[in-house]
Image (cartoon, rainbow, N blue to C red; front, side, top):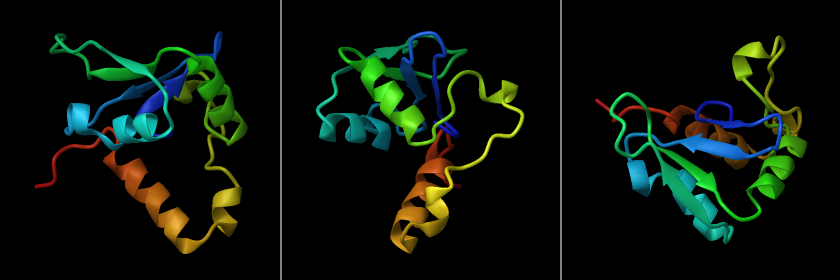
Length: 111
């Protein structure tokens, strides 16, 4: 959510922009691991990134993510956007995984 996604304010519907891995993105892996069904959007639009959005119960996921500290609404409109405080006390492996996920979305292929 912090780098490659958003949660709509009105209905808490999350949407994730896919990175260079497209349908093989870790976002897709995470949705599948959680048993969340999803659809792809803007696949044929060359001017937009392909997005993946949860279908059934997507708003439940959006609310859970917001409780975990993910921003809701346009991130550019949030004056003091910060990472969740619990990351500071999280084990090193969790912080590293968070950082890698942050850098990978909506990242570009490594050069």
